[in-house]
Image: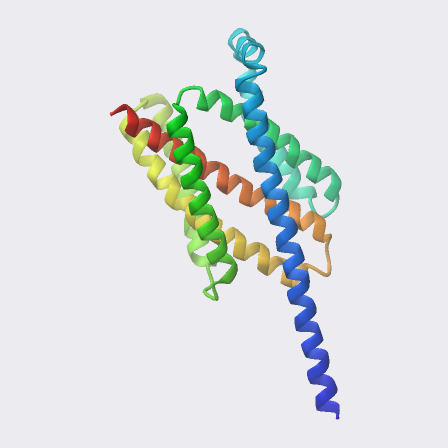
Length: 239
């Protein structure tokens, strides 16, 4: 009888964990999808309705670009540190971040054709979906390969800064392929990592905040995949 009760309790805990995990993952993907949609809308409005005002202001105040580029870093750090403590504020910061990145996308996409933009979006979406599903279902521990990807990303950032002075198109093209590989790996790893964090700490922290934190990581993975594919398709079409 005791064995039956123990088995029954264990089964209930496992079912509860699975149901909770499903709700958490759905909320995380929902936040991430909303962030992408907000960025897409922000980019569309910037390129169509507010193109003259935004591009004109930036051309007259070039220092604004530094704010546009540095503010997302500050917001990302704010979300990372405050997500589980203040989920509402973190969600608002994620939406603000999405709007800013939408403006950045509009500035970048202005230099590319609609064909390159569409191809980049479809490719990044396909890679992202494939790898996030893999990260969610695989039993393989991706922590080691994820750590290698982070190290490669740091090296790539340093090399990219150096290339800003060299201004080599070939190096930029090669770095774009490397970035695709890095963020492909990171998409799977971040998915698995957030799943493991929820299973380990989900009952100790705000699940809503944890979902915002996971959405931020997956959103940044998708954004970087998109930008990398855009550079690849854009430079290929010019050859």
